[in-house]
Amino acid sequence: MPDPLSLTDRLALQRTRLANERTFLTYVRTSLAMVGFGLVLLQLHPVRAGGLGYAALLAAGIVMLIGIFRFRQRRREIESC
Image (cartoon, rainbow, N blue to C red):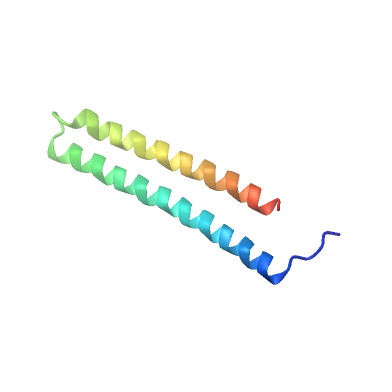
């Protein structure tokens, strides 16, 4: 049976978990901003800036996938401690 963690270790672990969640929410916020930017470009200039708008939407999806992947990876690392 593993040794129980001290109070300071438990608190440090909780801070680490919360930092991981904050980082994930930053990825979500960035992705949503990119979606908004892409949609604005598509609405304002569908012909001239359409390619850039679609690129922003694609980049938003990629950023979200990276955020999800990194969040899950870090969570596994944290829980294994």
